[in-house]
Length: 416
Image (cartoon, rainbow, N blue to C red):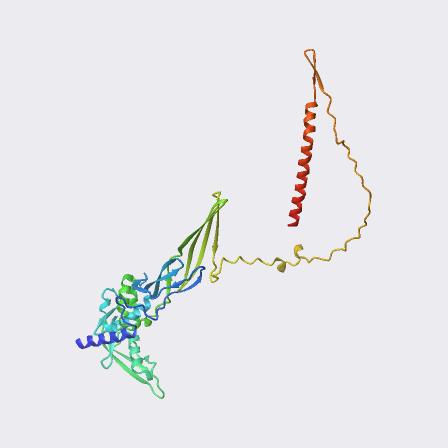
């Protein structure tokens, strides 16, 4: 027994070296498990994934399989994000690995699994079968018609396929083959009736272990840690790398203050990074929000988002459809024709004279008279007329100046 145990330990060590080493403590992620990649559309800085990454213990996937897990840091301009890495070993692949590992190390690490229908006897897996069971030349027991046929086809493959010559269930069971020129028969003798054990097929062992893992998924991480000691990792056929992490990472905020005669203008620019995941790739875009506060305390907000893969500014607006291409008969799509020649207009010179209708000097109205309590009262307009006559030069001067300013102002705008 000691020699057998030593031989199994040696085989486990060799297989462990072939699989990239035992995962214990700070053992690195296997070289075949690459880290995350990224597609960046970020301006104003660089994006990078830190290496190396750290490894976590195996975790259950909830259905009987287990995941190799790790983490990696994504560096962004003024920010960072922690990414989760994982590769799944399905319950079917984990059960297959457990079968292979048990053949090398025994089923000791599977004691916690409540598998049914198989037992470990004398270094092999056996299934429980209900007889009759047959044997030939010390083989068996073979407790089904399929088991008898399988045994004979494997021991005499040159004569396969063998077929049943007598019904299963009698005291003897005879098989026959038809090679050229003659019939060959083989007779099996009943050795027991009722329940007995027989060598389990690989499919039966994997089905039993897979059912046990699915019934108790919490056992999967421990089984995986044990299996990878004896089975090369790539033989477990792990799935593609999956990356997970936050959907949004808050970036830096910058403030720009401008002071002038009108007052203080403040602009705050905040950058957020948007992360999307596709298997092992991370796509990074950025959204920049600018908020401007003006001297009168009014604000204006604008948002700019980079397009994935562009990396050089805002999203391009969608292209508008060409209406004239789809509807050339539309009135707005008709081509312009040639205009008619300009007519030859006749000119005529005529004398023009202008005589002002109003006199330059006006007359003051006659005094107003009224009778109050039998007495006649006269109100003269002369003081008002004298005042108007005194203001006349001033009004004319202001009018000329206003007219001149208007003419020169219009002329300057036209020249500009």
